Length: 114
Image (cartoon, rainbow, N blue to C red; front, top):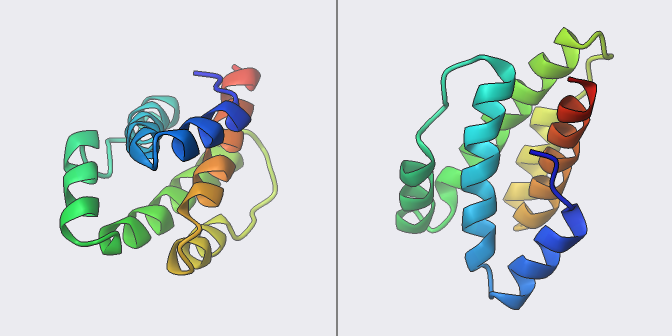
């Protein structure tokens, strides 16, 4: 689904991060459908593990999502980049909202290409 990044960021801030969990859930589910790959983890389990591990699992998930978006980019004929590393570094420094925005941008690009 093509989603406005600015609105998602605003909703995440206004809801004190609660919307960010929904946004993660949707990116996880939609990227699996768009890539044709199985889910890395179910959306509900992603949120649960993120909360239980105090966002440590989110760091791993961000890296795996970077790998998925790299494969999706390659399928469209795009140049390989370093998305896994970028998402990992952003998550390590607590900037998950920025990595989610980048993931949403990549997802919007894939949806626009279809």
